Image (cartoon, rainbow, N blue to C red; front, side, top):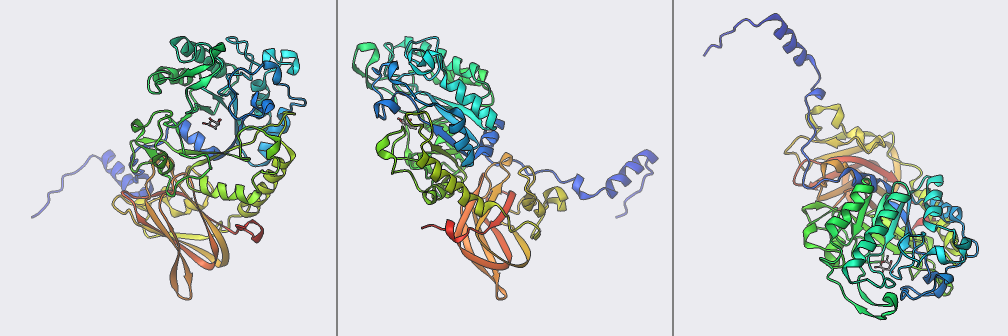
Amino acid sequence: MQTRCRSLPSGLLAALALIALSPVTEAAEPPAPYGPVPSPRQLQWHALEFYGFLHFTVNTFTDKEWGYGDESPAVFAPTDFDADQIVGVAKGAGMRGLILTAKHHDGFCLWPSEYTEHSVKNSPWRDGQGDVVREIADACRRHGLAFGTYLSPWDRNHPEYGRPAYLDYFRNQLRELMSGYGPLFEVWFDGANGGDGYYGGARETRRIDRLTYYDWPNTRQIVRDLQPGASMFSDAGPDVRWVGNEKGIAGDPAWSTLNRDDFAPGEADEKRLNRGDRPGTHWLPAECDVSIRPGWFYHSSEDDKVRSPHDLLDLYYKSVGRGASLLLNLPPDRRGRIHENDERSLRAFRALLDATFAEDLARGAVVSASNVRGDADRFSPAHVLDGDRQTYWSTDDGLATPELVLDLGDTVTFNVVSLREYLPLGQRVEDWALDAWEEGAWREFAKGTAIGNRRLWRGSDVATDRVRLRITKAPVCPALSEMALFLEPPKARPE
Ligand code: FUL
């Protein structure tokens, strides 16, 4: 059969010629997102990875973990409070933010709240003129750290706790914190709720209905309205989930997604929170909260129980290295400073981290892939080496198990591999494996499951001039933004 040629207008012909000449790069579209994807505020939160918690209140002075709510504001009397020292130690450790207990369960407010007398305004510290929240927030800004607040929903001091009037009080306090201290990166709502307490002198046990009492949808809206960039934490998010333990350890895997509506604050299925749900209905990544000491608050009896640098490093691999974030608690002492022992351990921990991650041994490698989406530069495997989280390697639709090879030129020895997915397209990879070229053949030296924000593999030394990454299971084509190789020196190896 003959096709009849009709003559085309010259303008259209020129346009067609242009299309034919233009590189395929223009034509290749990014892959469709898979499953739930992170919001812009969650993406900002993912970039922090490691930040600190400050547990500080009357408990620091009464040697308790949970104050009953009957403590006199007079007990809050730090002798040498120094926000720059506290924030400086956190920064020196590599933390990118700090979350302060503005109010813990005892109800004592570290800021001069207009709605209660139970606060720093009735403490001898700074003659009642002090504001710990302001000083820490300002110091964070000076040092370039993000700032966030912890406001305990449970309040063992307030007379109306458990009744409707308390909700108004809680929301007023939330408004004060959300509007008075600049942009916050995270707002922390604890799951511990209801029990015995002072409650304005009643000294009784009060229970609440965790699902309805705080009217969470409307309470959270206050945060959304006043702090649109802040991620909210609770057992059930809505932006960041509890990891299901206070040991700082994420599951392996710890999927960044969860069937969020199965959960409510204080109603946690710890195993599921630890691992997440795949594919999950919501993007809800895990945060690993853990203290550098046995307690959350400072106790001099724990001065010799500070986690060692190696222990902190292990936590880093088991939290950040599994796609979660690490929220490490540093309790200010009775002076209002981070204790020397904690500072020493943090410094040494940072030195171990730097000794490993200062040099990416894959930079400069020649990278090739079994497939490149649309043969387009924009999806080239070179993007896994460019140090830019916004660029990625991807493959054609339907090619979900491709391979990528790094040709290192010379033999390189490494024992840590870092992988990252391009998160705006969702969590795509389910299984992967790494091979080294040894004596004329590929040898598999590592394999794993979830990648997400970051996957750190840490193992024995591998010496090779070629490394291969195989995506071995994925429902859709991958979108990988980083592959890096590091050599952890002997002094940083697990003890
Ligand atoms: C828990 C609280 O009860 C602890 O005191 C601490 O604040 C920890 C981070 O969360 O649920």
